[in-house]
Length: 227
Image 1: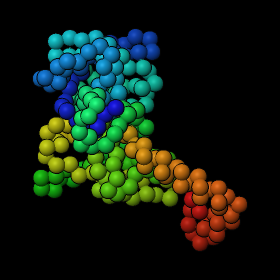
Image 2 (image 1 turned 180 degrees about the horizontal axis):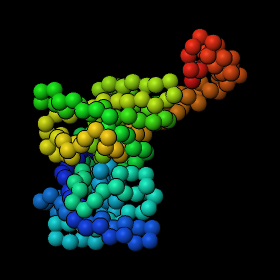
Image 3 (image 1 turned 30 degrees about the vertical axis):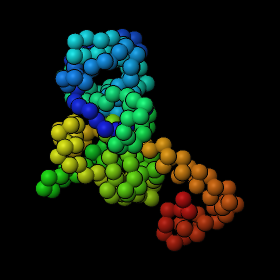
């Protein structure tokens, strides 16, 4: 379990590929690996990885091909910077929100704004994931717990959301180096997902016999459908 409070920036020191597996060696910021053991979990750009070997100031992680395909880790080169967080300890303060380190999807950074002392990231998200993102709610982006500032949904279920980053967040993460067109790992808040899915199932169960009629009526009035 993680909290989404990024503890520093690591760099990929070495990449080794084998059949169906890629080993990443991460060089950590000073003090990050104190007490780190083989088998421990570390969130790397939000992806929960297991330590397979230890080195001075660094560690190795094995990444499966499925993880490489689903997340941004498959596109990283040697020298790339990543957000890192150690697994949460029992009784530790949760400054962000509870994360599993299991990435749901990737978002595309579509625009950047830099008002004074802030950086605003707008990210496009595909269906069905956009239905779980709400203004003032939480979302994890590259392992960082962020509060959603604004949301806009399209009729097809896609959309975008914005987050505002303060200078301290930019200092401790890689977000200051991101550019338009970059892809970012997203983990949806599980509590929000459960609530949304439960409500949708309840509505479907009650309105099921009428949905076809409502869809037809909505199309007649120029909308996209009842759902």
